Image 1 (cartoon, rainbow, N blue to C red):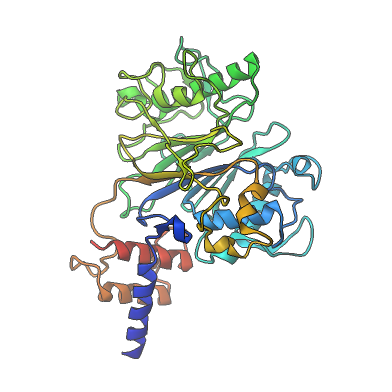
Image 2: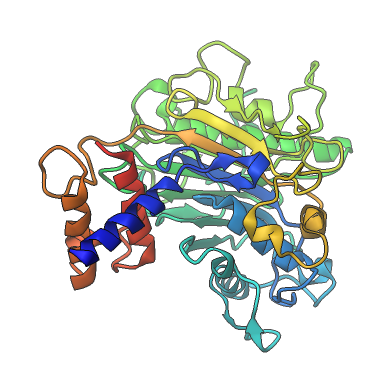
Length: 447
């Protein structure tokens, strides 16, 4: 009985802390454990193999601590792997090198590149948080790469055999809707993500872009073309343009071909450093092309129901600023609002934080308020999405219609014995801390 009492106390303490959104008091977590948090960040070369991966006043440590503070379910990064740009080495990391670097960023270990132990890593500051699924694009502009990290595994959702892709397939020109080609200089990275069955009714697709920078006419044209092609792929390929069929215009060239469109519960989120600088008065920029398709309004939008997608309304929760680099808003998350509803969107800046320093940053060497400015020249954008939940009650293990202490102790028994059919919540083939805290999340939601 004493053991059960101790576990009951532990359970009550653990579940009480799951809903944490109180920035003024340093709590930046999701309000609801089942929301999906997508985070985009241009990390300005700080994540590269030659960087000093130590707990010091440097960009690596600032990046690590902010990621640990925000705890995204999916993290899309731009400007990763550039050792020259970071000033700590030469050249761009290979896919293998950058993948290893990201594993060190998440989990720590011995640094095979610079020697010694990694002393700043995400799980040092939050051992229960992990994004073990890492996709580094082979596409590079000879300086940096795009990256997607996910709490959940990648899976082929559209039947083309590719759960992840470095860029759009080749798209033929189609009038004003798409110039044809692909995602441009750095490509449009795509990941299909398997959300846990029983908790969620659908899954998730994320598209990550780092569009051409610059104010010249050629720069503007390149990022417009890339966003038009990406919007076309989303509308005609992933959603079937409302026809229920993949690529009804027969204008997307890939082998093997996609076999099916996404289901009605699987939203697409498009984001990244879109270098949006168009005035939107007669000149449509990447954000509008990705959200609205061929025309603003009407019935040709890039949402599944043919309406327009929605761009984030993220602001700094203390200042109200939308800026993500200097005074500009360059970084966006665009989502299908007919499938997923926005809980909130926000820009994180440690300074001025008005007392909102998360615990992972409180011990940042020097002044914790400087962490954002040390980390990168862009600020991260977060989007918390409310998505359709699956039927039934995942936490109700004994099937009596509620989630109570009996279910919790049933899970503990399965966890202790390694019963994968019950305890492997995230489906990665083992029973570990991630599964335990996933079950706590489910238990806190009740039935």
